[in-house]
Structure formats: structure tokens, C-alpha cells
Image (cartoon, rainbow, N blue to C red; front, side, top):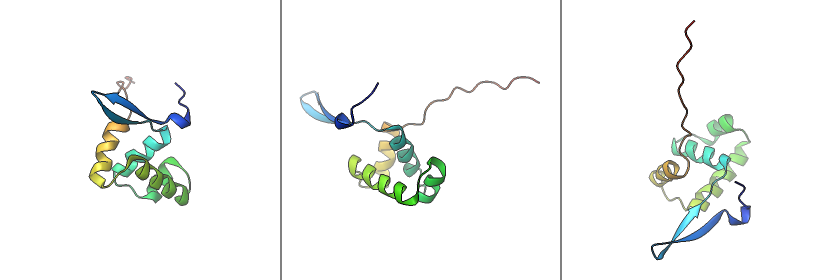
Length: 95
């Protein structure tokens, strides 16, 4: 499903109150997961690519976008918004 960038964030009415829904790009999810693990910008750069400047700028935008105030909050949001994809573990073939 394609999401227009202008509509990445929207408000939904939920039981009479507004609830903020945030849609993250795949790269934002990868970045959020690694930040939640406490990885440095340098380590993240090696894992997902980009320059240190790009990773730093993306980190700042993501923290501002999600209104993150602490590492605990970052970890909680990562679990909610960017869980690691589930992989099926297939048995190793017999040789």
C-alpha cells in the first residue's frame, strides 16, 4: 500500500479522543530498532548504510517526529512501531 508522504501522520478518532498514528518508513523502522538497542550512529551507519551525518540527521528527525524524551520511551516505541520482522525458522536439511 502506498502512503502519500503528506499523510504519514494523521489523527484518528478513538472513543471520543484523538489518537496520533505514526507511519514509519522501512528505513525509519530499521533506525528506530537500532537506536532502541543503544547502538551508536557509527555502528548504525555500518549496518544500514549512509554517512555519519545522514544517520545523525535521521536520528534527530525521528526523535522529533515521535516526541521521544528518554531511552525508555524510545525502547517502548520501537517495540510498538518497529518490531523485528518474524522469520520462520526452517529445519536444516539432512546431509
